[in-house]
Length: 492
Image (tube, rainbow, N blue to C red):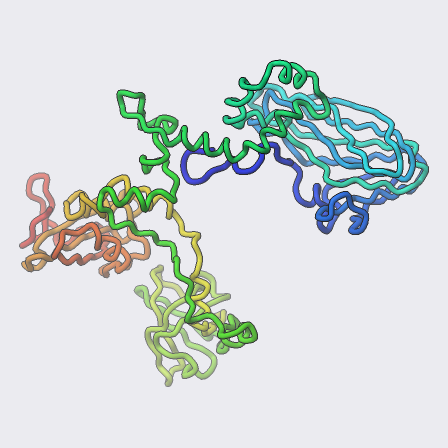
């Protein structure tokens, strides 16, 4: 299990390195190639109901050479073996040679006779992966002789790290308890190696996850070896730096933190169609209004669009999508309209510019709200951990540090922040200045509503927060010693 956001080791540790196309033949023959044969997917002749077969149809009586490349070892597999096996069925007895090789010049070859008419497991000799910081390309070659021109099937090909299953910590705890006679016999087994231990690992998979999680939960104080710079010494239960994200709401309760998760957790039921037949009529992403651009002009953060058509089809407050107009492209809220000049307008924080191409489409608002149902939010997990670690939305709220650090977390760049009390001589009013260039979506001389909203849980009770973006992060500043200030106001 990895420390941090999610459990990595779930399910048996022995996993197939092959992709779905190469292992399951869901629709194509994947990356397999052959000489003296044609390859197709066989949907009817299967060993397992859920796994298709690769059908190998000879084009000559010469030996068939079946090849698969495109896979590399990983650093985790260093000093281990890579093994291969698959199920094989031929119409008559055949002679098979399997070679598994790597570009480290190591290879392993195994040859054997295979009985015809039944499914047989065929295995490669495992290839060693050197103890190295390098990764190596793998090549699998299966040569089939004496096939008599009859078709051959293979299914469920598996390429895997031979001893990865031994990483299960609970298995390590159990093996010493097994009578020695069994462990001695186990060491002698081949094709596969350690079959008893492998069967145990499958049964102990979830026990291994639980055991490792328990180890990760253990708390150490500094005297017991805790080191903030070593995540292996931190508790995955109570330390927000490494705790599972699912535990953070629980942890936040101990510091009174008003935990905020920006994930939209409620489905917009009001925007869903009343029945399945209405999917394409009630919520249709296809624009109902679309007009070509005659000209687009952006000046001081305001865009004026002259359109070729009747702009009464748009209304102030509706959303439009601009495309084919370069850096004007995007979705915007209509803020102005002039029927006489066939223009509409919206805000866009960008440098002055013009364009004369593109289209402006009216977007169904209900579709926008439905599309917003997602959980992929940039820096979400970082924000959740930050709340619980620093408690600026909890017991430390209302302090200058909480206001300053909560503002900085929202900003980019050098994160310039200046906070002034008694703004305009008004008690209980705090004004915050930030640089426009460091404030996401910031507009010169205007307030960032998103930033103000983000500070509500960090501000002192009873105070109001206002904000302004400008090029310096301050306004009407005078210097007194090393302190900056605004005339008539005090710098916190």
